[in-house]
Length: 418
Image 1 (cartoon, rainbow, N blue to C red):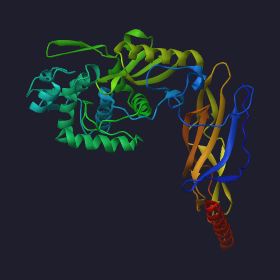
Image 2: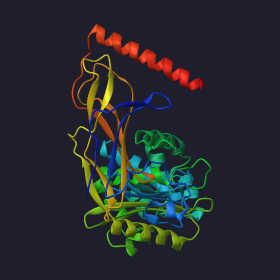
Image 3: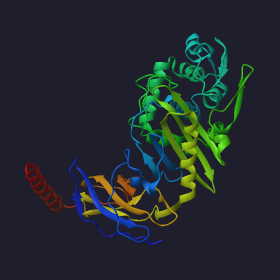
């Protein structure tokens, strides 16, 4: 593999929107041939325009490497659609987080209210764990019911037991989603039952799945359990991948009339874990087929490669009023990206930050991100931090930087009028 990387001190190029700056371009190519310019997410692209020529019949899909977060494939990945029961992953995440902080326990018991029973239980005629009205069920059993049986009554009981009302729980779900960086997702209930306000993209569902896998390895094992019996009713896990694909161990299916069939799945083969999300599929069998094919394609064609170590200087950020004009940037974690095994991928990386950065700068200060594209797809985004201190400079240095920024501001204003 030939890796061409520019690590010299960059010239700054000012972005046209807001105050974002592109501090240098790290151009990289794997294999022979020219470096391609980066575009945005594939939105309904023609087959020959999709990564590697691969296409899926799923209206919306994404394939992610769990370790690095690299996106291997995407199609309409940011399109907001009804997530149906896949939205239960957000409910489960909030419960996991409260368990991890010790605010609730698996042995805590919550009452099955009449609302939970009528809306999500046996009378509703939808997916349920068949919890009896007014009975008390432990958090552990409710999680089994929500994950394995996709019980709508399970989710409502968890919501009411934790927050008092389902609506109060939904508000906490939204707050938690924003903390996790899910900026576009919106929720109206705890279980994904039809509501116009329930919207998620496959990208954010994939990010949520990756977070669950990496953050809660012990609780994640629930997703691979193939059956659960409650109220003397035995039900099997609704995830078809568990029986269709070696190494599959999660996560969730979903269906509503407006949203179609969807699936968030994950599998491990040869030490590599991939996450797949498909949504909007018309047929229940096609949902499993498309997810399985996409996973198999990923395992067959990709491998992980390291681009930068966590202590590697990947570029420099302009500093305003510092002793030095630039501060070196290092990634907060090793930068790894999934690449094609045949070496045909063209990669391009850019450092993006808001600047110039005001002095003083302390080591470890978050400055921006490095984004790596594989062809038309954003493959990975890793935070960057200052590698060393840059104290406040002399009065002369600050004056010179101020004059420089003034000139550049005037020039930019003039260009905007052309």
